[in-house]
Amino acid sequence: MAGQEVANKRVVLKRYVTGFPGADDMEVVTGTARVAVPPGSTAMVLKNLYVSCDPYMRGRMTKHERPSYVPDFVVGEVLENFGVCKVIASGHQDFKVGDLVWGMTGWEEYTLIHNPESFFKIKHPELPLSYYTGVLGMPGLTAWAGFFDVGKPKKGDYVFVSAASGAVGQLVGQFAKLTGCYVVGSAGSDEKVNLLKTKFGFDEAFNYKKEQDLDAALRRYFPEGIDIYFENVGGSTLEAVLPNMRIHGRIPTCGMISQYNLEEPEGVHNLFEIIAKRLRMEGFMVFDYYGQYHKFEQEMAGYLKAGKIAYVEDIAEGLEKAPEALIGLFTGRNVGKQLVAIARE
Image 1: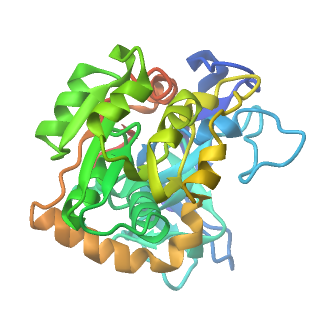
Image 2: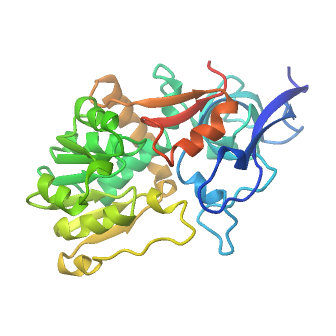
């Protein structure tokens, strides 16, 4: 196989998106890939096994006049995101053929990587490899860093998590329980609410689509107020949370999925509560924590093996399903962490 060209199925961006994206904004095409590294280069060629679908990708599908925190995708070029991969050719001394790795790769069968040092080697291949797109990968590190470093939880804190059954939320809730907090999650279906209470151990959970008045729902679940709100959705949820925060409450701000498909972002009322309650609302980026990844991986692998953390995945089979799987994140179709299996090991 070394040196030859092989067929390479890939998902490319067909057009830049405004408003709500559709699967037809992407296209599955077949090209070719060389499965050898250029002579003298430190590149590597990866066979992609699993790729992750994450909400932040929506922002990369829009053309930005002012650069965003990650570059826009390019029309006609392959999409990229975190994936689990096998090295099939390498000119880099730290990566050998057969190594299992995770990092930023193409939504395609084979990818040439010019910066192998941006990848992490997989240290726990005895756990499901797909976990490295989720609980042991970027979303896991996001939950860990956001809850512990930004949220600064204490035993007995009252914690609210939005989008609580998603890739990040399901872990934040379980971290909160491991810390000795009281935790309530919101999700968009009764099935997800049931999952939060039975599988992930949340103290309470509710379906926000069935609540006419979010403020009243929060007062019902948090009569004493909220110490930590792990923010994944923004919009009307944030607006309802602010008056229900306790003094010196913390709001680790991870995402705002309610805003990603709007042409004009919504404003937020109740911001004076930040002053009155002395709140700290702080955004964070997972890549600022890559230096702590190995510490996180060891800790999380321990929790998984001890049965202290459960994780639910929603796996679409085949690259052809990737566009629909990504769009499904914005209608809540997925149950748990959404990923795509390209080739199972």
